[in-house]
Structure formats: C-alpha cells, structure tokens
Image (cartoon, rainbow, N blue to C red; front, side):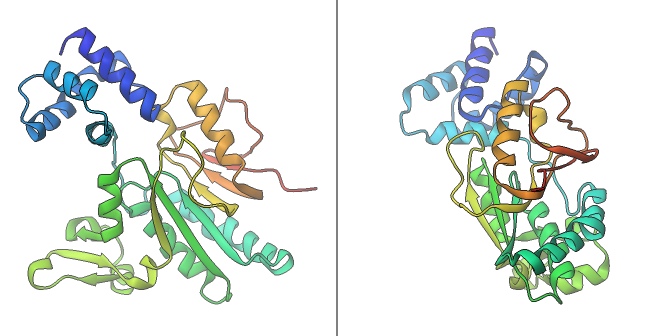
Length: 275
C-alpha cells in the first residue's frame, strides 16, 4: 500500500466515522482492505481507492467502515460494570423511580457490536427489575450494518454462549436443533426489550428522544482523537437524566477531557444530580 493510498483511506475513514488511524495501523488497514479487494474482485488497493472516489451511492464506503471497525466483544465483558449495576445503580434507580415516577428505565448501548453487551444488560435488568413492576427498554446502536444484522438475529455459537453459567443459558437462551444445532438464540423475552439502530455517534442525533438512566459506551473512544472524545462524551452526557450513569471501557479515561460528569470510580461516571 502506497503512502498516498494509506493517507486517502485514513482520511476518508476519519471524515465518515471519526476513527483515527495512526501510522501504526497501516498493516491492519492493509489486511482489512484485502477482504474488500476479494469482495469487489479488484486486484490492487489503488483500484479500490478509485472505486471509493467514483461511487457516489456510499455503499462501498459503508463496507469500508464495516471492515475497519473493530468488533471484539463477549457476554458480560468487563464484569465489574455489571456487578456495580446490581449493587449500586439499580437499587438507587429503583428508589428514585418510586419518588420521581419515571415511566420506564431506559438504557443505551451506544456501540453494541454483535449484541453481547445489550443482551448482557438485558439479563441484568430482568433480574434487577423483575419484582418492581417497572418497565424497561434498551436502545442499541452501532456504525456497522454487518454487526447490527447479527445482533438482531441474536444467534450465537455454542462456544460463545458456554462462557455463561448453565442456569443463565437455560433461562435466557433457546438451544438450536436441526440446521441450528450448535447455536443458541436469545429468547424473545429478552429480545423484545432491545431495539437496534444504525448510528454514527458523531453525526446528527440518535433516532430516540428519551433521556437515559444508563449509557454504555465502552471501548469506543480508544479509536478517537482527543477532540472527538470530548465531543462524544459531552453529547452522551446531555442524554443522561440528572444522576444518570455513563460507563466507558476500563482501558479508557476521561482525564484531560472537558466534561461535566463526576467520576464515581474508574470507568464509571455520573451526571451530577439536581441539588
């Protein structure tokens, strides 16, 4: 890959996704582009750059963003977050619901990938809210059409699901038979609480208007430069109810970013409650 081709790709990706590809990502980009060369039956990255320049419908650009995006995830990733929800966030929110009469508990999985995060959250909310009579909803978004399709299908390989306790699998998953042997599907009781939307977090407003008691935006900002991180954090903070929580990845920190949130503990922030 020539310098000019790498610069073109990294600039295009940044403009349309705000993902920052530094010089150390050159080999990764070349490997990911290899998949698109095979899909488009092109023989060189130069030809692929010409395709991107000449196609006006944005279809191949969407495939490029899909290819570059990293979607590593698994059920209950970063377990301390879910422990904190059970021990602190949900008891507090249930108590506030009794006085403030919120119609529903709303959570947002802002970079949901293939669905493991929102379904992990759905399991947690089911168990925390099952005896309260309080309804709940999870909005889940991602920039990748490919992972959203998989998340919506809610079908996972046995080796992925088997990381969960057997009782959890039995309660929340259907075991595949026949052509689906070796797969598990999330049961409708969970799926019905999760809505998926395609969204670039930095472009426009999300397709929902409710304020959230909880937002997960984990392992996303590590791909952004400082200005983009600051823009995103403040955009998310505005969507929280006073006293609502923003959870970021444990490898992420808001140090050095101007924002209005309170640090609760590493990777957990809170919009200040109204005095």
